[in-house]
Image 1 (tube, one colour):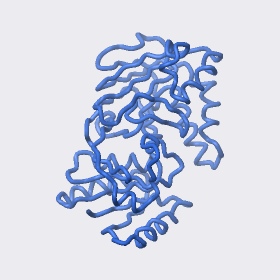
Image 2: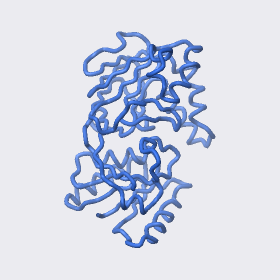
Image 3: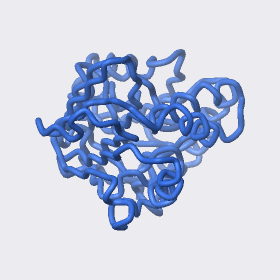
Image 4: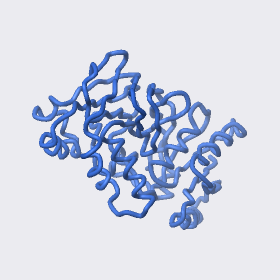
Length: 298
């Protein structure tokens, strides 16, 4: 197996490459590996796609060394490739994807090398974008968009500040949602909608508690528009993943298991793909079953 470690080379993260190489060199059986440092946004996707095209028969494990954004970029470049695997070395600011794998160490070279491959699903958005974790829109996407901007400016707790902004301008959204052709909202306003392949967003929100990343289904959690008082009571249940089970909160949600989702908004909105924002008016989201071979650490 050839290992390709893809490291986010942003300022303050460049030291991760040295740390990773030191751990690999300390292994009793040193693996065949190389390190690629990202140069710009989406450079990891382009690198992985080109590598797969140029080395079709070389069994390779692409190790996303970073957070959810890096994982998304690497996975997006792998879709459809043969004899290729995805692994994660967690050293990013957001690590929601790996919370699905409880009690697994994603910072151990030995556990990674001795891990087990397992095929998982991925969400395809429109023609050429992907989400391996959670795709969300409405309130959550307003939070994520604001948090991304604040994070680039060096703010601490940017996600929480994003919530403050979204409380004032992200609670009432006119977005049409169809799940496998079924219209969920009939023109009514909505608070948010999550399309889950995995379970967590924002570092602490267990938004899609029934998701399984290998069942070929999208977990749709559509929340109707609610008053501010109701919202404040709802958010704790939403964070803990109890919102679909508690009768007081579940009545505000429409839950579906679907294979495709169609989204339409008269005004431009942003949807959030694993923390990355995609603007537009119309989106088609579908599940691609067993699209990625993922290495679960030993």
